[in-house]
Image (cartoon, rainbow, N blue to C red; front, top):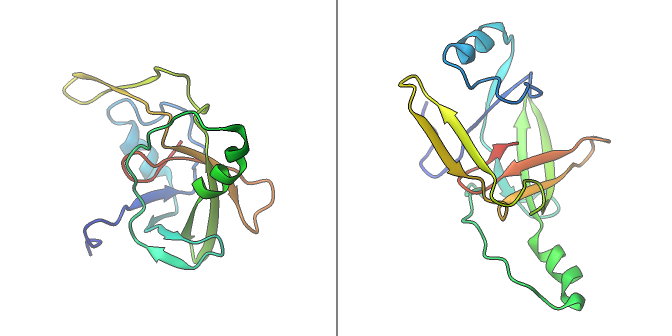
Length: 153
């Protein structure tokens, strides 16, 4: 069953802690997927701070950043928080996220090579990266990119 258009689907594996670059070489992905015993297709939803459904639209364009007055920073931070609900293996998780433009270095790029051995390089934008926590899951942390759909970092 295909998900409705506009819904970002994320494949969450029980091994979310794969080492960086683990899926970069041809054949690695198939090898890893053969060894994973459980996985789940997840459809995240945008919610309010209490976890109430707002939308299936979870992707946002990179936001322009500009300098603001110091007294506006606290109010701005509260307004920039985003919230998502994700159900994995029958359990619902509520992500509380805030922007973190310092998660990657300025000018950082992502480089990968596909089966054609053609190298692709794209900028990694810092203005759509978020970090936060998961309610009811002490000591858990979340880092995502919301530049072009939800992606874990």
